[in-house]
Length: 214
Image 1 (tube, one colour):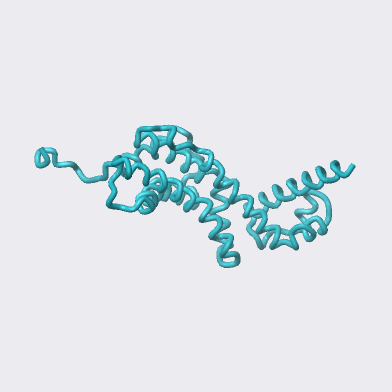
Image 2: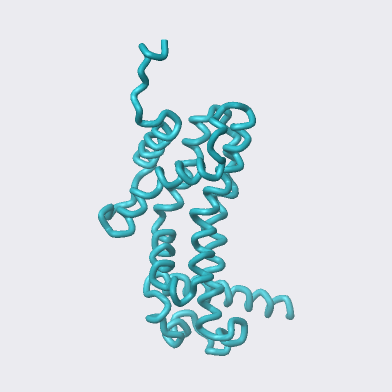
């Protein structure tokens, strides 16, 4: 009997978090009504004020879980599965761009922009779970490649990683956020954009003077 009550309570909590996530991402913090949320999932205000202390506590819990969901796909990626530097960067870049351009990730970014002044710590958490997580994980890999003399060592791994992530993400993400790219990019386009970023990152844009270097 006790186990059944615990299971029902956990299921009710999951349903509440999921419904609240959708509403906060769609409407922002201020516009969400607890009464509307309760009408949607059932229960009473006690189900919100008991475990979360109110709307603000629920919002914090929602964003915390969304951040965990955002970082998980990158944590599961084994970039060392590809031994070639270009192939490994392409594997990593495609995963990052796919995550960044998901509708829920874009909604979370808009939420960070809209509510950042009210909840600065949550805005920073979103930033760390997304951009910083990608840079941090890539910088570890770049550091290993520098030790192996496969990548230049006169620039820090974190700076190189940040340059690659910015080169890859900034344009597609901004176009999606402002609505210029109205449709999600398919896998072929994500791969194409990633390969361009990898080529520019590894080779640069400067034409090599082969005669001078011969």
